[in-house]
Image 1: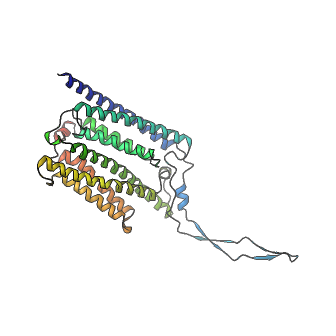
Image 2: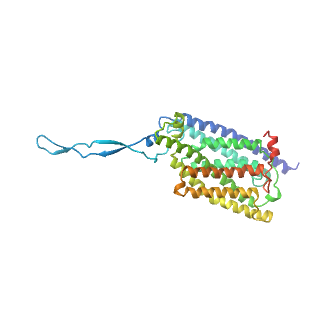
Length: 370
C-alpha cells in the first residue's frame, strides 16, 4: 500500500469516527429538546385558546342622563354593555415556543441548540474528511449523499436561528430524523471510500448534486413546517368550534406558532428554493449531454426530478390562488416532498437506470436483513 493510499484510508476512518461522534451528540441534543418541551412552562400557554374563545360583541346603549338635585351639571352614566355571541377570529398570536416562555425551558433549549451546533461541526468534519479521503466531492454514492444531506439540513436550521427566526421548535423533529438518516447511512447505505465511475468525473458533480442536496434540505424544513401547520390548524379549528382538545395536545400545540404563521413560513421556504430546484434539473440535463450525449432521455431519475418539479409548481400555484390556501395546498406540498423522497431513495435503490451508480441495490438491502 502506498503512502497516499494509507493516508486516504486513515482519513476515511477519521470521517467515520466523526460521523459516529456527531450521532452521539445529536442524541444528547434530542434529549435536551425533549427536556425543553417537557419542562417548559405550561402555565404560560393558552394564547390560541384565549384568542379563539368566542368573544362578546359590545353594543353601547344610549347613555342615561341624571341631573343633580340642586340643579347642577348633568352627569352621563357609564354606558351599559349588552353581550352578544360572536364567531371569534382566527387571527391568533404565535405560541411562546417550545420552552413555554419560562427560564428553565429556555435553558434546556439553549443547551439543545449548543449541542446541535457541536454535532453539526462534527458531521461537517466527517463530510470534509470523507472528501479528502477520496479526493473528490463527497457525494458520489448514497452514503455520502445521506451524510451531506443531513448536515446541510441542520445547517439550514442553524442559519434560520442565526437570522433570528422563530424556528427552535423544529429542533426536536430535525434531530430525530437526522439520527434516523445517519443510522440508515452507517448501516444499510455505508460504502467504503472509492473513486467515481467515469460518468461522474465532471465539474458538474459539484454544481448539480450540491444544489440538489441544498434544495432537499430546504424542502425538508418546509415539509416539517407543513406537518406542524396541519396539526395546529386542526387544533385551532377544534377550539373555534367549541371543542376541548386534550391536555397533551394543548400543552404541545399551544407553544407552536399560529397556523397562519406556519402556513406562510412553509410557503416562503418552498417558494424561495423552487428556482434553485429548477436550476438543478437544468444543470443535470447539461451534465447528461456531456456524459451520455443527450440532454434528456426520461431516465427514472430525470423523470422523478421532473415530477417533483411539477408537484412543487402545482403547490406554489395553488398556494397563490385564494381557493387553495391552507390545508389543500399543504397536502400538495407534502405530496411534492414525497416525490422528492422517492427520487432520493426509491429511484437510487429500487429502480435501474443510468443513475444506478449509487452503490446501493436490492442485494445490499437483503444483506442488511430487509
